[in-house]
Image (cartoon, rainbow, N blue to C red; front, side):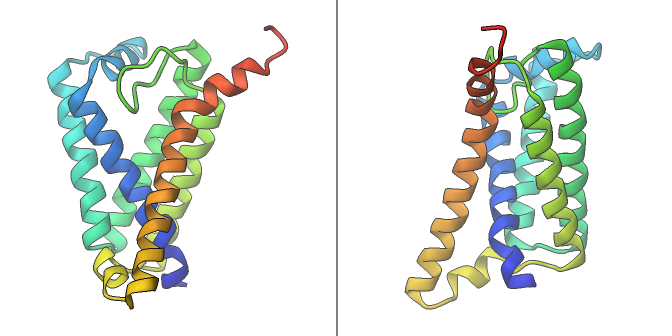
Length: 172
């Protein structure tokens, strides 16, 4: 089970790294999102969250275990709750930088699914990135490509799916 879980868990970790990097580069969207929820936020606070996300993602990639996986699961569960609250207010989450697209139920569901992957990682410890890279060259390349491809698809789902779904809404 640990080998099967390794790619989706590493992809979830890489998504945390991408989101953290985006918040470091452009915190404005997340500042607006936090303020829309009635809490105080500053670019510095959001950048600190970005550092936390990035560090947690690296921890999960390098040393996956029950504690790192549980921390990632908790963060993704919090993101699911925030996405739910923001979608009802039609406010962007700012997860991956400055965007004017409102959060959606799809983002909430995606965060909940990633939380479930991380919960599974807390139960069945996935293999570390080092294990993937130590496989024979063809397999290592395939595993790394799978992780990067999955993470890219997840980020695209977070950023593009809300507007794609709204284009299909009956109100348009």
